[in-house]
Image (cartoon, rainbow over all chains, first blue to last red; front, side, top):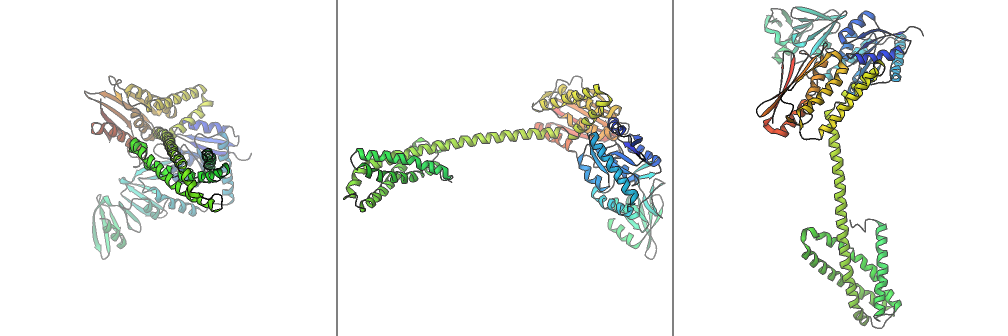
Length: 252
Length: 348
């Protein structure tokens, strides 16, 4: 056996982790590098340890398996583990290697491991088209309805930002910055992608570079011909484009 | 469709019955000396079979006046009139048939033969039609009883299906799958614990089945069921799930079965399970003057995304309370300080 398959086990139930540990221990080609009881630990472990495969429970407190995957990106393969079969389709939409239904046998576990190894071989041979995948995920997204919160990964840490607390979102080079209560959180995403996940009745694209939470508006001032400024409750001034003003007045 | 005409096999058997009857009629005619044996057979057998077809009408006559609706007097009158008419029709056919055979030179005087044979024909036709009607009534009654039996079976199947559906609604299948996963883990980690878990699960399922069939159970039984459910979940969640139940003085109150169980299940799956550190599911029951008040409260994730969970469990409990007590029962939910509280009040 060449390089061992380095795996991270993520499940909030210790007994569920024990089963995976037991099955994995029987395969000398597998190395368990971390064992996490929740999504936050998982994001930290994956960021620091760069495993080949994450075995990820779907139902977990605070961050569910899909949210963890969204934060992790696509550098490692993922096998979902759950007692619920209704997430299978969604799991394959986000390119999970496999989907294990609890309880599962050692044979079924091995099958998933074989698939993960195949996926890794294929990946090193042919790097995937990242744009294709992120487009695919974005396409799949709106079906779940507007997001109730924004998940932001900051190295090994995760910020969970309820959308009510987002004042506005600003495009910054390759990132978007979520502004909330005087703090700023950077996320590797495009402003258009953010726009699609937010509730369109509460967030408006007022400018090429800004999405605004309409609850935060104090007033809109005309300061030059065809050029306006939105003044927020905290005094922040944001530019409003002509198209942005049209969208804003439609909503207000 | 007539039951006899519906299948060729039945029709053949029916015709076969009328052949010996035709021989009987021939014998009557021959013994009376109206006709010779050969002629009697030649006349009687075809007429008998044709009368067989005529008698098929008895099915419709009996269908038009069922005994249980029109009463025996009218049934009797109908039978006599129908038998009389059909015999009369048959006599006309017999007259024609005799005439036809006579035209082939068998007898000189067909009318004379008919006159002497007519009373026998009439009596035979009358009695057989009555018999056909009686058989029709019997067949109809048999059909009705078989229908009733089938409907009874169908009802039983429906009732069983409803029971199963109710059971499915009461027990979340994921609860079973997750429990089996825990057992699967324990079999190598801690075999005695795996066995304990199997027994807990078995007791819980048995209780659910047994209590579900009853109208009212003491609160203490419902709480015992809830404790079993929570014990199973505690194996899964470990220290994250704590339980605190107090119902002093209210244990004897009679309650509808499996009313609290879904609320407690919600407290675990939508409450404690969403918290990293877990928490305590607290159940309080208190007996008032004329009512019982039960509260189930649990910590919950205050900033969880809205719309998780379908609210099905709560809706079912509400619907059951309404159908059992109307406006006398109340179910209120309240969320404050990261705790979710369900308060249930029902008359005693």
